[in-house]
Figure 1 (cartoon, rainbow, N blue to C red):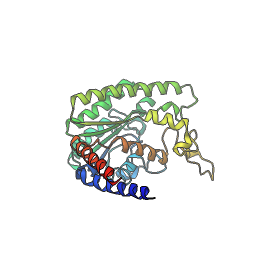
Figure 2: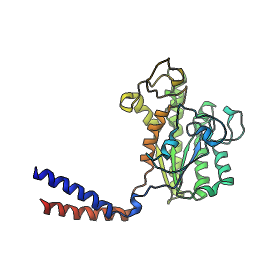
Figure 3: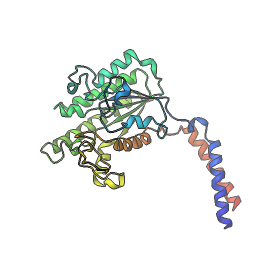
Figure 4: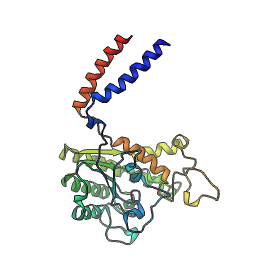
Length: 297
């Protein structure tokens, strides 16, 4: 019993001491705001003032990412449903609102609204696939958007790759499934190479990524572990009284529950590594605590 009391006492002292060992900045929330670009996966619907509902049955991932349970930072959402990685949005019959148009429009009109400590999120490319455009061109467009924003002084980017679009209800089990999978994978490879080059060009900028391709494959392989009952059907077509947790909202887009899962992983991916000085202080403190624990024993 005495050993257990000593253990709990050491644990409480440890937690208190670590709080004092690390500088305040190590515990502070990392970003002042979140700036989102992309397509319907990031479009927060009516919240953008354009009278368009979300393309899901609830909040999308960047909304969850900004909430108190994740990064707790204000969200400025510039994404448009149907956007390509270029300038156009054929799904909406619009020659503008594509990813690069969003970036240019933001930089020309709203660049003073957020600071360099903002987290910029970018998720686009699926609509290029649906339109039969090349994966190389789509990846290059995303890289161009990042280049513009990095050149404008933004320091933190979370760039999402594409999930395996062949697994969506629209394509799963069709002759197009394999082609969509290969396109998604090739796009991701091109994007990864482009981001690596940008990291060399901007060594002080933080480029974070989330591998949604692997994440979707894992969810599809073991749905219950991730909280899903139905990973092949569509929430929009659910039968009356069906209370199952669906992965897909419609033919290609995820439910809000899936968006929440993405936000959980995105938040973890975008948390900065502590500065070396903070780690040095933590290491020194832990050595001292180790000695203190021995004396207690």
